[in-house]
Length: 275
Image 1 (cartoon, rainbow, N blue to C red):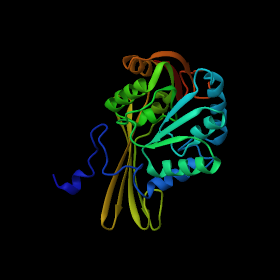
Image 2 (cartoon, helix red, strand yellow):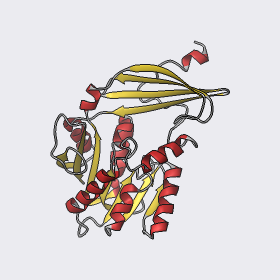
Image 3 (tube, rainbow, N blue to C red):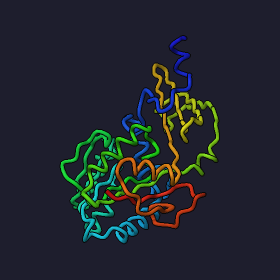
Image 4 (cartoon, helix red, strand yellow):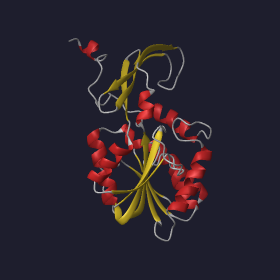
Protein backbone atom coordinates (compact mmCIF):
# COMPACT_ATOMS: atom_id res chain seq x y z
CA UNK A 1 0.00 0.00 0.00
CA UNK A 2 1.14 3.54 -0.75
CA UNK A 3 3.07 5.02 2.18
CA UNK A 4 0.90 8.13 2.16
CA UNK A 5 -2.26 6.05 2.42
CA UNK A 6 -0.80 3.96 5.26
CA UNK A 7 -0.55 7.11 7.31
CA UNK A 8 -4.33 7.30 7.40
CA UNK A 9 -4.88 3.68 8.45
CA UNK A 10 -6.02 3.32 12.04
CA UNK A 11 -3.08 2.20 14.19
CA UNK A 12 -2.82 -1.02 16.14
CA UNK A 13 -3.79 -0.68 19.78
CA UNK A 14 -1.21 1.36 21.74
CA UNK A 15 0.86 2.05 18.64
CA UNK A 16 2.89 5.23 19.07
CA UNK A 17 2.44 8.21 16.80
CA UNK A 18 5.28 9.85 14.94
CA UNK A 19 5.43 12.56 17.59
CA UNK A 20 4.62 12.98 21.29
CA UNK A 21 2.60 15.86 22.70
CA UNK A 22 4.88 15.85 25.78
CA UNK A 23 8.10 16.48 23.86
CA UNK A 24 6.84 18.50 20.88
CA UNK A 25 8.39 21.98 21.30
CA UNK A 26 5.17 23.80 20.44
CA UNK A 27 2.44 21.55 21.87
CA UNK A 28 4.25 21.04 25.18
CA UNK A 29 4.00 24.80 25.64
CA UNK A 30 0.28 24.68 24.94
CA UNK A 31 -0.09 21.89 27.49
CA UNK A 32 1.85 23.85 30.09
CA UNK A 33 -0.47 26.83 29.65
CA UNK A 34 -3.44 24.50 30.15
CA UNK A 35 -1.88 23.02 33.29
CA UNK A 36 -1.39 26.48 34.75
CA UNK A 37 -4.91 27.74 34.00
CA UNK A 38 -6.63 27.67 37.43
CA UNK A 39 -10.11 27.35 35.92
CA UNK A 40 -9.39 24.74 33.23
CA UNK A 41 -10.18 21.13 34.04
CA UNK A 42 -8.71 19.46 30.97
CA UNK A 43 -4.96 19.21 31.64
CA UNK A 44 -4.83 19.53 35.40
CA UNK A 45 -7.84 19.84 37.63
CA UNK A 46 -9.08 23.22 38.78
CA UNK A 47 -7.10 24.85 41.57
CA UNK A 48 -9.97 24.55 44.04
CA UNK A 49 -9.96 20.78 43.53
CA UNK A 50 -6.17 20.54 43.86
CA UNK A 51 -6.24 22.56 47.08
CA UNK A 52 -8.91 20.30 48.56
CA UNK A 53 -7.03 17.22 47.35
CA UNK A 54 -3.77 18.33 48.97
CA UNK A 55 -5.59 18.96 52.25
CA UNK A 56 -7.15 15.49 52.10
CA UNK A 57 -3.79 13.87 51.33
CA UNK A 58 -2.30 15.59 54.38
CA UNK A 59 -5.18 14.29 56.51
CA UNK A 60 -4.96 10.71 55.19
CA UNK A 61 -1.15 10.47 55.09
CA UNK A 62 0.20 12.49 58.05
CA UNK A 63 3.87 13.43 58.10
CA UNK A 64 4.74 11.36 61.15
CA UNK A 65 4.79 8.23 58.96
CA UNK A 66 4.51 9.59 55.38
CA UNK A 67 7.07 12.39 55.38
CA UNK A 68 8.75 11.54 52.06
CA UNK A 69 6.59 11.81 48.93
CA UNK A 70 7.27 11.17 45.25
CA UNK A 71 4.87 12.49 42.60
CA UNK A 72 4.95 10.50 39.35
CA UNK A 73 3.99 12.73 36.42
CA UNK A 74 4.29 15.86 38.53
CA UNK A 75 3.89 18.31 35.63
CA UNK A 76 4.69 21.91 36.61
CA UNK A 77 4.51 21.07 40.32
CA UNK A 78 0.90 21.70 41.28
CA UNK A 79 0.85 18.94 43.92
CA UNK A 80 4.54 18.94 44.81
CA UNK A 81 4.42 22.60 45.81
CA UNK A 82 1.37 22.18 47.99
CA UNK A 83 2.81 19.18 49.78
CA UNK A 84 6.18 20.92 50.25
CA UNK A 85 4.38 23.93 51.73
CA UNK A 86 2.82 21.55 54.25
CA UNK A 87 6.28 20.39 55.32
CA UNK A 88 6.69 17.10 53.41
CA UNK A 89 9.96 16.16 51.73
CA UNK A 90 8.94 16.01 48.08
CA UNK A 91 10.34 14.66 44.81
CA UNK A 92 8.67 15.06 41.42
CA UNK A 93 9.41 13.32 38.13
CA UNK A 94 7.99 14.17 34.70
CA UNK A 95 8.71 13.40 31.05
CA UNK A 96 8.07 16.97 29.89
CA UNK A 97 11.23 19.07 30.04
CA UNK A 98 9.17 22.24 29.72
CA UNK A 99 7.01 21.32 32.72
CA UNK A 100 10.01 20.38 34.87
CA UNK A 101 11.78 23.64 34.00
CA UNK A 102 8.68 25.57 35.02
CA UNK A 103 8.39 23.55 38.24
CA UNK A 104 12.03 24.19 39.16
CA UNK A 105 11.71 27.91 38.49
CA UNK A 106 8.54 28.14 40.57
CA UNK A 107 10.05 26.20 43.47
CA UNK A 108 13.18 28.37 43.45
CA UNK A 109 11.09 31.53 43.42
CA UNK A 110 9.14 30.32 46.47
CA UNK A 111 12.24 28.83 48.13
CA UNK A 112 10.63 25.41 48.31
CA UNK A 113 13.16 22.55 48.69
CA UNK A 114 11.60 20.24 46.07
CA UNK A 115 13.72 17.77 44.11
CA UNK A 116 12.69 17.55 40.47
CA UNK A 117 13.73 14.91 37.96
CA UNK A 118 13.32 15.23 34.20
CA UNK A 119 12.88 11.64 33.09
CA UNK A 120 10.67 8.78 32.02
CA UNK A 121 9.11 7.11 35.05
CA UNK A 122 8.88 3.87 33.08
CA UNK A 123 12.66 3.54 33.04
CA UNK A 124 13.83 5.72 35.94
CA UNK A 125 15.74 3.93 38.71
CA UNK A 126 15.32 5.67 42.09
CA UNK A 127 18.25 6.22 44.41
CA UNK A 128 16.01 6.61 47.46
CA UNK A 129 12.80 5.10 48.82
CA UNK A 130 9.61 6.90 49.76
CA UNK A 131 6.69 6.68 52.17
CA UNK A 132 4.03 7.80 49.69
CA UNK A 133 3.80 7.73 45.89
CA UNK A 134 1.29 9.83 43.96
CA UNK A 135 0.00 9.16 40.44
CA UNK A 136 -2.73 11.73 39.97
CA UNK A 137 -5.02 12.87 37.15
CA UNK A 138 -5.30 9.56 35.38
CA UNK A 139 -1.76 9.27 34.00
CA UNK A 140 -2.30 5.53 34.33
CA UNK A 141 -4.93 5.60 31.61
CA UNK A 142 -2.48 6.96 29.03
CA UNK A 143 -0.33 3.83 29.17
CA UNK A 144 -0.42 0.49 27.38
CA UNK A 145 -0.94 -2.75 29.28
CA UNK A 146 2.79 -3.48 29.41
CA UNK A 147 3.62 0.09 30.38
CA UNK A 148 1.10 -0.07 33.21
CA UNK A 149 2.78 -3.22 34.52
CA UNK A 150 6.17 -1.54 34.31
CA UNK A 151 4.98 1.58 36.11
CA UNK A 152 3.34 -0.35 38.94
CA UNK A 153 6.54 -2.38 39.35
CA UNK A 154 8.62 0.80 39.45
CA UNK A 155 6.32 2.46 41.98
CA UNK A 156 6.31 -0.66 44.13
CA UNK A 157 10.11 -0.76 44.17
CA UNK A 158 10.25 2.98 44.92
CA UNK A 159 8.24 2.60 48.14
CA UNK A 160 9.48 1.57 51.55
CA UNK A 161 7.89 -1.52 53.10
CA UNK A 162 4.48 -0.37 54.29
CA UNK A 163 4.62 2.60 51.91
CA UNK A 164 1.40 3.80 50.30
CA UNK A 165 0.35 4.56 46.74
CA UNK A 166 -2.45 7.00 45.88
CA UNK A 167 -3.57 6.89 42.26
CA UNK A 168 -6.63 7.54 40.13
CA UNK A 169 -7.92 6.67 36.68
CA UNK A 170 -10.82 7.07 34.29
CA UNK A 171 -13.71 4.64 34.74
CA UNK A 172 -15.73 2.75 32.17
CA UNK A 173 -18.56 5.24 32.79
CA UNK A 174 -16.57 7.64 30.61
CA UNK A 175 -16.05 4.88 28.06
CA UNK A 176 -19.80 4.39 27.76
CA UNK A 177 -20.21 8.05 26.87
CA UNK A 178 -17.35 8.04 24.33
CA UNK A 179 -18.35 8.85 20.74
CA UNK A 180 -16.49 7.65 17.67
CA UNK A 181 -15.97 10.59 15.34
CA UNK A 182 -13.85 11.80 12.43
CA UNK A 183 -13.44 15.45 11.45
CA UNK A 184 -11.19 17.75 9.45
CA UNK A 185 -10.37 21.32 10.41
CA UNK A 186 -8.47 23.94 8.40
CA UNK A 187 -6.53 26.55 10.37
CA UNK A 188 -5.28 29.74 8.78
CA UNK A 189 -3.54 30.66 12.02
CA UNK A 190 -1.95 28.83 14.93
CA UNK A 191 -4.06 26.40 16.98
CA UNK A 192 -3.34 24.00 19.84
CA UNK A 193 -1.75 21.57 17.38
CA UNK A 194 0.58 23.75 15.32
CA UNK A 195 1.83 27.20 14.47
CA UNK A 196 0.80 28.95 11.26
CA UNK A 197 -1.40 27.48 8.56
CA UNK A 198 -2.21 23.79 8.93
CA UNK A 199 -4.90 21.12 8.62
CA UNK A 200 -5.88 18.68 11.37
CA UNK A 201 -7.59 15.32 11.00
CA UNK A 202 -9.12 14.32 14.34
CA UNK A 203 -10.30 10.74 14.91
CA UNK A 204 -11.84 9.12 17.96
CA UNK A 205 -12.06 5.33 17.92
CA UNK A 206 -12.97 2.60 20.42
CA UNK A 207 -10.65 -0.39 20.72
CA UNK A 208 -10.80 -3.58 22.77
CA UNK A 209 -9.55 -3.80 26.37
CA UNK A 210 -11.53 -0.74 27.52
CA UNK A 211 -9.26 1.50 25.44
CA UNK A 212 -9.90 4.36 23.04
CA UNK A 213 -7.77 6.37 20.65
CA UNK A 214 -7.94 10.14 20.24
CA UNK A 215 -5.76 10.81 17.23
CA UNK A 216 -4.65 14.03 15.59
CA UNK A 217 -2.88 14.03 12.22
CA UNK A 218 -1.43 17.47 11.60
CA UNK A 219 -0.58 18.45 8.04
CA UNK A 220 1.61 21.45 7.21
CA UNK A 221 3.22 22.43 3.93
CA UNK A 222 6.25 20.16 4.33
CA UNK A 223 5.40 18.20 7.45
CA UNK A 224 3.06 15.47 8.71
CA UNK A 225 2.80 14.69 12.41
CA UNK A 226 0.71 11.93 13.99
CA UNK A 227 -0.26 12.17 17.65
CA UNK A 228 -1.85 9.02 19.09
CA UNK A 229 -3.39 9.65 22.50
CA UNK A 230 -4.59 6.45 24.15
CA UNK A 231 -6.98 6.25 27.08
CA UNK A 232 -7.53 3.13 29.14
CA UNK A 233 -10.58 2.96 31.41
CA UNK A 234 -10.61 1.01 34.68
CA UNK A 235 -13.19 -0.58 36.93
CA UNK A 236 -12.62 -1.17 40.62
CA UNK A 237 -12.08 -4.85 39.82
CA UNK A 238 -9.60 -4.38 36.97
CA UNK A 239 -7.51 -1.77 38.78
CA UNK A 240 -7.48 -3.81 41.99
CA UNK A 241 -6.35 -6.88 40.05
CA UNK A 242 -3.53 -4.99 38.32
CA UNK A 243 -2.33 -3.56 41.64
CA UNK A 244 -2.43 -6.94 43.34
CA UNK A 245 -0.50 -8.54 40.48
CA UNK A 246 2.20 -5.93 41.10
CA UNK A 247 2.36 -6.92 44.79
CA UNK A 248 0.21 -4.17 46.29
CA UNK A 249 -2.61 -4.61 48.79
CA UNK A 250 -5.59 -2.35 48.13
CA UNK A 251 -6.58 -0.53 51.31
CA UNK A 252 -9.33 1.85 50.18
CA UNK A 253 -11.31 2.93 47.12
CA UNK A 254 -12.69 6.43 46.57
CA UNK A 255 -14.45 8.38 43.87
CA UNK A 256 -11.52 10.78 43.53
CA UNK A 257 -8.38 12.07 45.21
CA UNK A 258 -10.42 14.37 47.43
CA UNK A 259 -11.68 11.24 49.18
CA UNK A 260 -15.32 11.36 48.14
CA UNK A 261 -17.36 8.19 48.52
CA UNK A 262 -16.80 5.73 45.67
CA UNK A 263 -19.63 5.42 43.14
CA UNK A 264 -19.78 2.74 40.45
CA UNK A 265 -21.22 5.35 38.07
CA UNK A 266 -18.53 7.94 38.82
CA UNK A 267 -16.24 9.09 36.02
CA UNK A 268 -13.04 8.46 38.02
CA UNK A 269 -11.94 6.24 40.86
CA UNK A 270 -9.03 6.60 43.25
CA UNK A 271 -7.28 3.81 45.12
CA UNK A 272 -4.97 3.69 48.11
CA UNK A 273 -2.67 0.65 47.98
CA UNK A 274 0.11 -0.53 50.27
CA UNK A 275 3.42 -2.24 49.65
